[in-house]
Length: 98
Image (tube, rainbow, N blue to C red; front, top):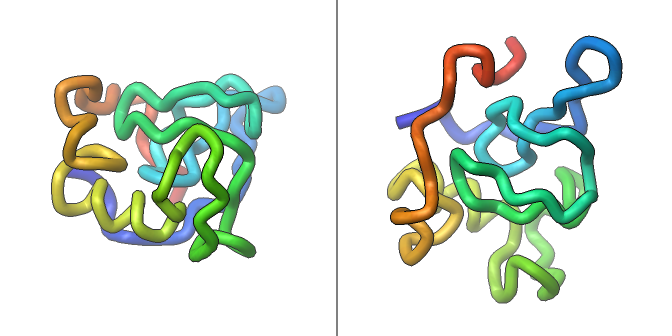
């Protein structure tokens, strides 16, 4: 289903992008904090990261903290069970950095 639950801080790929999604860890984002929706887990990247992962910020991810979204991804394959129909499998080139 995906990587084990880990913290995925802002990680840059080659040439300052793409970036790893802070929820699922797959490298799917063109920028960080740009409100882009990850196609693998459906997390909307509002810039939340490990230092405040347990905080519910509201905004685009509603009542979800990043920590809860990560747990949900591990169990259901999406940041929220209701979003499972909106996600797709990761591509080989999107694998999390090691």
